Length: 92
Image 1 (tube, rainbow, N blue to C red):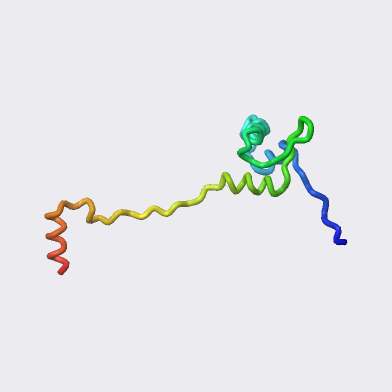
Image 2 (cartoon, rainbow, N blue to C red; image 1 turned 135 degrees about the vertical axis):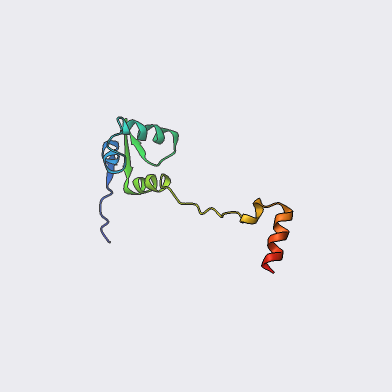
C-alpha cells in the first residue's frame, strides 16, 4: 500500500496571511462569512473553520480577474448612410 502524505489543513488566520491583503483589518471574518454562505469551500470542526490546499486554490481561482476581449465596432457604424456610400465609392 502506498503511503499518502497527511492532509494539510489551514486555519483562517493562515489562509488570510497567505492569500488576502495584509492591510485588511478583519480578513478572518471576511473568510468566515463566505464560508458560512457557501461561497468558498472549507469545513468546520466544532467552532473552528479549516481549509485544505484545494479550498485555498479554489478561493484564488474564484477571485481571479480574467480579461475579457471586447470587439470594437466598425468605425463605419457611426457614419450616416450617405457618408458610407461616399466612402464606398472612393474605395472602389
